[in-house]
View 1 (cartoon, rainbow, N blue to C red):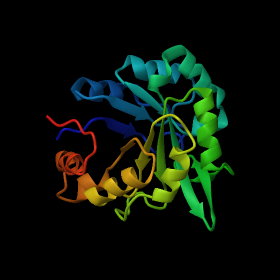
View 2: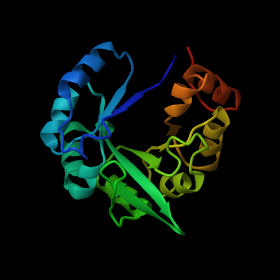
View 3: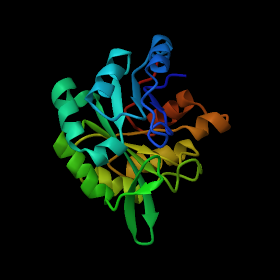
View 4: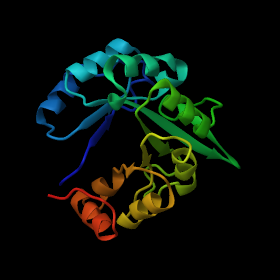
Length: 211
């Protein structure tokens, strides 16, 4: 289906106090012939080391990056910025945004723009930015949020949450500084495919790898 990268997130691991399932990740990596980013339950440098050891190409960190920002710095210094990804989950609350941790269950008081800038300064090589409000709705990405965060940092920002059509992908890429898009429900619950999405975006003038 020509997916460029698989993002595999155990969204209940941190909430339930579990560590990453290293055995499962190793089994997935053995069958996954594309780059794979893995997150969920990452708490310390040993979790990062083990995930990379069992086959993850990048490690995605969310709650631990909030509770212990130094982990991002430590991970980047030990393993390289290219494999340290910070995931930021955001809810829109009246006229402001707030970062949430613990799978979108715990408000942090953090502003996503400031949090993203701090994570970049700590050594994050990439940000996955998810709109909790849009996630799973297939009603389009939060373009305003994506633009605000992506314009504030010099590392790639992946827009996540809300893809319902190829046009949604085109819109967020055109109207924000997002480097790429993540999508899930659109491919699970509709007939649309990653390969068709890439062909559509290539036709619209984006630089896309197609076999």
